[in-house]
Length: 205
Image (cartoon, rainbow, N blue to C red; front, side):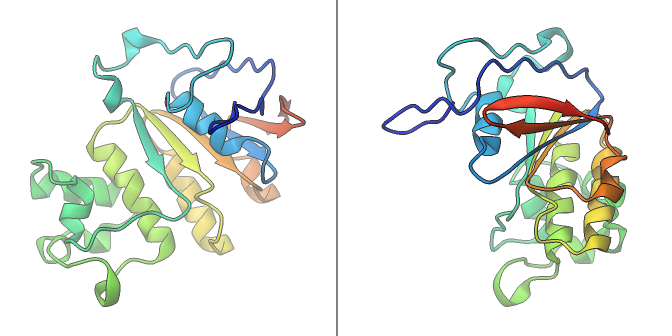
């Protein structure tokens, strides 16, 4: 369901059951309702009808700690790598270094790199590495659900494959919502669905 001054029914009769720990993909053309679906899952858009049900027994009591996000164009603060990773919370350097290593950013997993400033002329991470940084942040914050908003878009084949592998290894539920996924990556998902004419349809992974 869309938002704004006029509510637009973008998705109809959607029933989606994804077990914890699965790596699922949802594809859809521009304007099909992909971003709306993400915002609805996160509770940012209210449903006109139906409900979103989560197994609360398997989730932290604080709803704000449920979701991590990987954006198509990650926002970077003009702060150090460590501050961009921890977002001002009190994490030890060792914890941040372990999170970076887990997402394939081991070359930045040291005190000197954590102290380097990101943003502007000081940028030290590529586009694909910035997206891995968001996954590392979700790992550090122990987010049980990771939503991916067209993070593969704009990456070359090698970078997309590397990020896809990182997402597959994430220790939680991952829902990767993309405009397009190349055939060689489709097989990496446990489940693949597509948004077409307002409906979700399952296709073979």
